[in-house]
Image 1 (cartoon, rainbow, N blue to C red):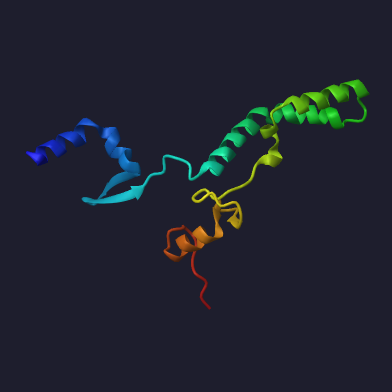
Image 2: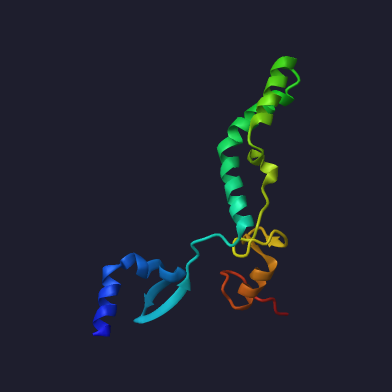
Amino acid sequence: MNIFRSVTNIFSNPLKNICGNNKLITQTNTQFSVIPCRTKYVDWRMLRDVKRRRVVKEYAQERLHLNVLHYNTLLPKDLRVSAKETVAALPTDSCITKLHKRCILTSRPRGRFRKFRMSRIIWRHLADYNQISGVERAMW
């Protein structure tokens, strides 16, 4: 009877089977393997950075045009001042210098490989266990 319940649970709620308990179950050659499936951000710093990136993307064009008007010395002074005031009125998180590149797995802000977008520690660990494509230990 328990087997029947487990089989009916599998077919009755397919979404739970796909991403239930933050795990993704895949079938490969009649064997089941469990792959971790991230559904949340690592910590509050990464969440804050993601929110800032959304704001920067939203206001990037407007901020760029206003800064061009502000720094153009050929324009009248009152137009430049009004452009500066408008830039100052934009959200502070819309400035691109507030962004900080972080590791996508641990949210570590320092020691990050640009190509892989992960910290040197995580990169080394994954490279040691041959989990990064195209990376090989140097041997001479």
